[in-house]
Amino acid sequence: MKVSNLSFGASSLGGVFHSIKENDGIEAVITAVENGINFIDVSPYYGHLKAETVLGKALKLIPRDKYYLSTKVGRYGKDGVNYWDYSAKRATESVYESMERLNVDYIDLINVHDIEFTDLQKVAEETLPALVELKKKGIVGHVGITDLQPENLKWVIEHSEEGTVESVLNFCHYCLNDELLVDFLDFFEERGIGVINASPLSMGLLSERGAPDWHPAPEALKEACTRAAQYCKEKGYPIEKLAVQYSTSLNPRIATTLFSSANPQNVLKNIQFVNEPMDEQLVKEVKAIIGDQMGARWKNS
Image 1 (cartoon, one colour):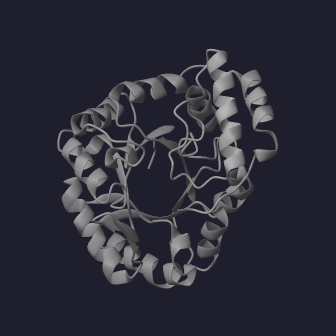
Image 2 (cartoon, one colour):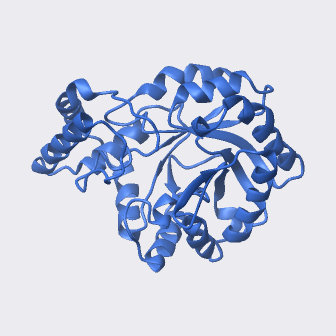
């Protein structure tokens, strides 16, 4: 798959970061595709099926050959309660259920979602082989894994049959406050594995709005990012702009970077950000403000 440098993450369509208007969400997807974005990522977990449902309404209005579609298995939610099921049976069922919600008859990329929430051996020996069977049947095109911790991605690849994992999605580790993902790029490249970077805003840390209440980052990092955002605001250069530019412009070994917005105007802004030169001096100043919180880590939630 040849994907756009900037891609559309549909988590916002599920109201993950704040409440949305459904029609705006649908228009945001259409706007993204009409302006050159050709990779869309979602999960049944986002908004507990809401994101897939809203995205499916949008995709009915877009020719299927205009985008590549990625969704996930393993992590779910219902009636406000999160749950996890990485069994082969549930993974297989989930793919068909997602296709129905998304109004498509195949998935370009299917991922095992947030593998840290289960036994990694089970992912390698049960979940992934089930997805490979769907690939053999032409139901999915490619198979991947996602996680916050790149060490987990590496472990599963090393303990899976060669060629099983074709892509990895890692988030919050190639952005203004963290570059951990770079340490693993040689490993992925040597094995021909595509790399998807997600959340250039570090799940809201790098934004004027600030991180949502549920964000699991350490308080010291949240405070440092708040100071950095304020500094950028005073400079007349939104930290969101700098963050998106930083995540998309510096490393050709990263296939694409996912951002998420349910606002059509914000989609256009992000696309514009990528097409403008980045203020490299401001990058240095922001990193200095973040200081010893650069690379601070947290557990997924």
